[in-house]
Length: 368
Image: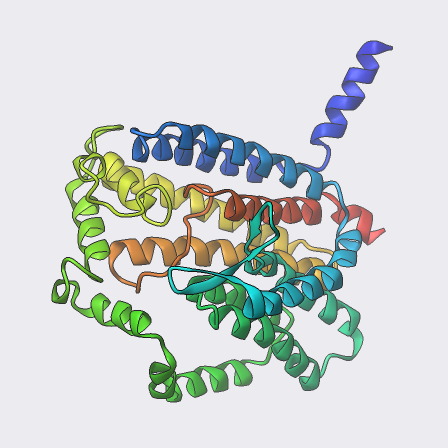
């Protein structure tokens, strides 16, 4: 009887976990933890803290995977409303750090409400489209666009362009998978291109400087161009096979800024070289490919658009981070999924993987 209990418990623990997703995620976490350890070799407590963050993320992933998609929909409206209200409170009473008002102090802890919207926005839009699935018209896409625009504008105002881009991208992907007409997409792209000069005048000075630095980093080698110059030197110095773990000179001589967070890809590239980068890119492609398979097999509109949004958001994270570290995109605050040090982003990404697992493992139940 005891053995039967253990067997049922074992089955219960893995019943709603998707094996391929879990293996890819664990591989990325393992690579990420070893790279964080190397990047923070003089402060190894950060590697331990990252290991704890990963444990929390895995627990959150498992817990979310147990909920079927129809129950996840119940969290959409409350999470969105709470997130927007907290963003308004940040705008009014938020703590200002380094010129940006992104944090809300609760006395014993500070929170960054914008992180809630990375999942809150796609959940809300997916719920909205699922509710109106039978009668979707252009006005529904306009309402969804407004639901997306409100948190995007509040986050961009903080200013936090990196998070605003991620939230905006996650919301747009929901619109895309919900069937937004191509004519509208092309029209929006043309409008955006035409409005570029106006948008340029609205950017903060440091944001304009980042874009100009992308064109010519050597114009300010000790200022705004320092990040890109040092990261590209690290990537190039890794060569084909890298310098080896804990042997990166750019890393351990502390030339690479934010080497354990946003610029961890530069640390990895210096130590593992082109071969290691190829394996890392392959892992991300496998993760995205599995997510797209889950999207294609989803049983409901909510599940399909939510899975598609999460999957393409993971692509956006990886592409933008690697692009900015490699010097082909402006520097924005976007972490490398399951690699960069940090608890909030890691848990948010893990919850996203949990939602994908929920959609995959509950799909037969939903069809019945």
